[in-house]
Length: 269
Ligand code: DGL
Image 1 (cartoon, rainbow, N blue to C red):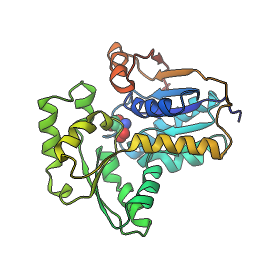
Image 2: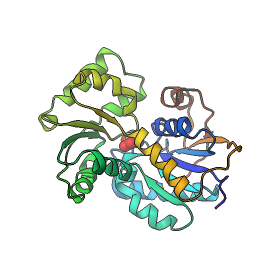
Image 3: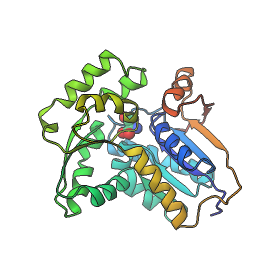
């Protein structure tokens, strides 16, 4: 794989642009191909089987584009399809999910602690964070709550207002999230409501924005595998979606921080 090959990033939609953005901030010279499966969004309410089928099709597209690394930038797809995708891609590209870097971080910094976690139904019902944290053998307890209203709320631009404040409060006041030492934001969309969640806790516990952790891990993996783009080179960025609408393109501004041109590439036929 040449060092100039792109990093492939995929998500159920445009929420994964928060992670793509964190990566471009950290390693701006790396070429990126983003794929948002807007035709099948949301993944959070889909079965694992459906998410696996979509993920394999997206990987075919990213492999056709010669990606050196494929990042599953979606918690729901990382929970449902990582093992399958990794086996499917084999040695053709490095496959990274958004869960394992967070587990590594817990391993290093959160021994003996109890963490809350919020995410989609798919992510939370899979129990994957709790299982992997338990397997570390460091007495780390993860208590999860599905918060399915949050992603569509953010997509509609409802954050930093009183409606979002009330919805966030309703969720965070649930018993399962009582007595936690920190809160993991296990969904692509949640970096956008981190400040409101911080306000709720008023600094009493850390709120963990996983996009920073995953971006750091991508940089480390590229360097370790000698796959980072050579100094002096600057790669291009392309953003594909399986179903294009003007409203998706407008919303990219929210998630990526700047306007993006979306290219339609249907993957279901
Ligand atoms: N990208 C999804 C995740 O991180 C959230 C949106 C969806 O349900 O598709 O879990």
